[in-house]
Image 1 (cartoon, helix red, strand yellow):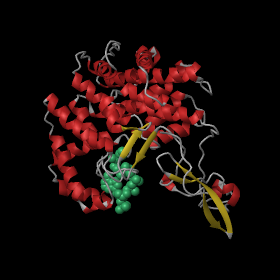
Image 2 (cartoon, protein in one colour):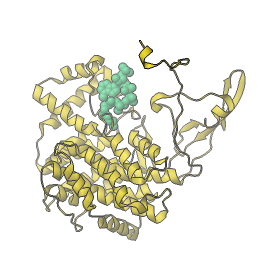
Image 3 (cartoon, protein in one colour):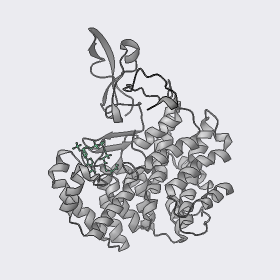
Image 4 (cartoon, protein in one colour):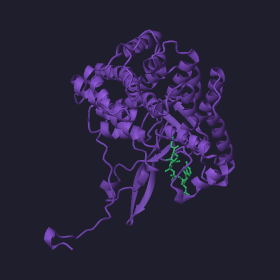
Length: 433
Ligand SMILES: CC(C)(COP(=O)(O)OP(=O)(O)OC[C@H]1O[C@@H](n2cnc3c(N)ncnc32)[C@H](O)[C@@H]1OP(=O)(O)O)[C@@H](O)C(=O)NCCC(=O)NCCS
């Protein structure tokens, strides 16, 4: 089922300055309701004010649906639970980007095309080597992605045609894996390892990072599921950044690099690294859960329970539920015993009963357990957010493609309400107090 329906009232009445205005109502295919304010300023002189975009629908989109109250997430109408169990990262990437599950031949061609982008330009390899070894791999990744524009002028034209878009998704998915692995190798002072096309996507990534070709199938599968869970999440901070930057018709490499930058922040994708650091700190300090939670509840402490809370989910994040189960199973399969998993579980149990978290509907999010799996799989902490970026890339690409292909495409440009000084006059510097 698809297509937004026009159900219910067709307009909302707004009374403003003794004038009645009709604002169209838009109802999405899952029943989400919106008041269309695109003509509000022209008709009334007013704009809407919504800092943090708490109640703003910035676009219509047919890619991902999520219901934060019920804890539902679907890619192109398919429940995340089904996709995580039955699909693969590359297939779900195809699904979000092209809007349908691929046929066998379409899938094979897509996988082969991604695998054909198994190397990066020599100049980018040199660029990686110029970074200090202590550089965060997200900095290296972001710089590398935008640098790709210098080697791919053909994909930097203003409006890409279908073939160019097909190339862009395959190329970026192939090359992000190489760049991510090489950023890590460099941080370890190790030589780069050539990608091996005979390996599946995740095994090849682990191989390029570690040099071990015998990647356990459980490890590759667990990584694949983690990537699936990160593929898209509608208009989050990094995706909105991608749409914002892409709306200026910046090239696709600059656009995706902007997504990586937004993702890096600890309130967004950077939270997975922050969770691990927090769990480690609890372990090292020997602080009890109650004492730690008292700290995060104290607004003056400046600290938060990382991996908890979400702008949209006011219930369990369905991805967190899948990851928690996967976490137990991966650690058991690999025979890993991680005291940080016990701390995470203990912390979660106490927090979920704590009035502060209950009243604010704060539940574990996707980042709460993902770091523990990454750790068990041998992925170092500073690579966690890079893994998130690899997973989210197809979502960013799909959202960008949808935006540029939508009729009535416009540059994104919010308004503001000015609150500064109004009547200043210039004073020469020598006369200023
Ligand atoms: C995700 C997040 C940024 C959402 O923020 P938001 O929608 O703007 O919600 P707010 O920051 O307004 O939080 C609402 C209330 O819950 C509290 N809160 C939210 N997340 C909290 C957390 N993780 N720990 C402690 N308190 C938290 C806020 O202090 C605020 O309390 P108040 O109403 O008494 O002022 C926020 O929950 C957070 O910082 N979580 C930790 C970082 C994280 O895991 N990010 C990954 C998201 S996938």
